[in-house]
Length: 361
Ligand SMILES: [Zn+2]
Ligand SMILES: [Zn+2]
Ligand SMILES: [Zn+2]
Image 1 (cartoon, rainbow, N blue to C red):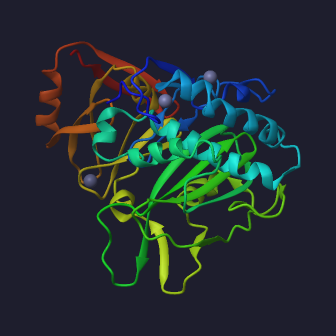
Image 2: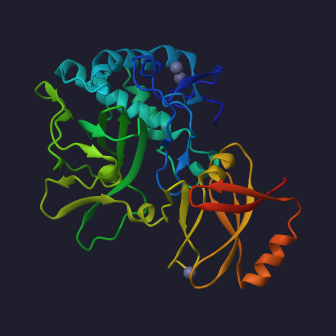
């Protein structure tokens, strides 16, 4: 499966491509390493470490997609978006609006390929049908049917982010669907933010309005002036990305994050520590972000922590998650931890010291 081109299905040799087009690293944007995140539909933030932004790559496309329609979209995006990414006021001509919306969709689909196979098996990815459908309309240079996009201004230290939130159309008292109806896609690039809603081909699409008063990019209309509407900040980003400024234009219908996805406990990063809900579901536990970064490289740790119940937990980091291996009284948990082979390590972080043991395979 993962040996074929994610878009056209070709089994030609796969080529490596940047999640964000190469042009983004060449337009004079500040490339100081920053912590940046990409990918999470929900669940753990997949931290990409402290490398310069716009450097992540995925190897999932054949050369003819990569050098053909995908590359043509990057050219339009570079010409139209580069000034806005750098904060220069500008406008987007209606003739370019389809290509920019399609480029945003292509970029979100590409970024989602960074999630692990394990995550995708659990449904944390965009449906394959969206990749195929986008490929099939490559010559129309338009986003998928039943898509709306808006474009606005972002202000914050994050220089690149992609976030996808599964959404559902709700009519009062009708039960939640067993799969999302739509996906809210959000891209941050320098000072630019692109936000879109795309309905699944099989789902009932509804029209939505964006109460942030950001100009609509797609369906195309008048030339789009940038920047206009509310600025999205680091504080408002998550709410915005979860579609909280989108309202159905129909009275009895609402568009909301799909609950099964929304209920997956979200971990957040606070002062260099990842905070995840404890098993008791009343408290949280914390561990240094460096453990998550190591986990992405295949290096895993065991550590003991506790919540205010008080309950002690033996935790292991894994490629996608941090797993609770045992919970109970502190003495028993400590004894189990002590039996794990290997030396204890000390990790210093802004809030103090953290002890863990590296797990050997
Ligand atoms: Zn291809
Ligand atoms: Zn590239
Ligand atoms: Zn607790």
